[in-house]
Image (cartoon, rainbow, N blue to C red; front, side):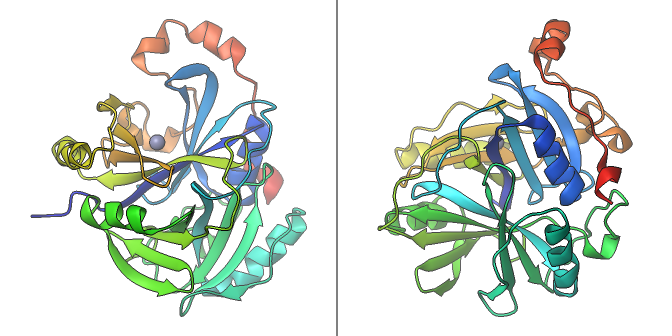
Length: 317
Ligand code: ZN
């Protein structure tokens, strides 16, 4: 039997300013805005999806930008760092680029073998890293203002801080098809698929304060499952583990099931398809506001409520 979980699908975070969010992720980092839509559970807020050319699972970072929302706090029970995979030879390029746009970063540091890590944050303090490595076979995406050879390939890993890691580890290995593939100090690395974009690091961090939701924090992480049938099978496993999963919800670009893992982080299982070309062509992804059917009749009101944004990555050449 094939795996029910194939890796990371997306990470969703909360921001405080739609325009600054666009400028940072499209402009500075050069990701593609693959979908501009609204929060399906509250359409007065945007939902931005950034990723590679078509928004493949393992490249997707998404945001709810609540204008003016106060900052949350990193801590345990939270996914605190999302990392991007870039080639080793791009180290100087990216350090220069962060410097040029006034983004503070921490000194490069070795983590596991052949991984050089640089920590930085976005405008809201969301924890990010570049992981410079040479084991990523994915093509990056370039809007043109960042040379293709330096472009972000997608995620590398995510980092979750936990009071204790054992119960979350058991969920990952017993229900979510992950394996422990590396460990160092208090860091335990799991993956459903041993390749960049799919590593889940649990950090045993009992001395940390508890994380608090707000801007600059992650709302949830989604794992990828091939289709609706495998999603239903995973859902049953979660029911048997008594973690009370949500019903299957239609998110237009995938279907979703949510549940809270024992350490407090919201997990989602999302289907790999149908993907972002379901309501606009690939060459037009993210250009116009896409609404799910149930909100289409309120489009005029929704467009009036949402803040105006402009997309001009050329400012970030
Ligand atoms: Zn999600």
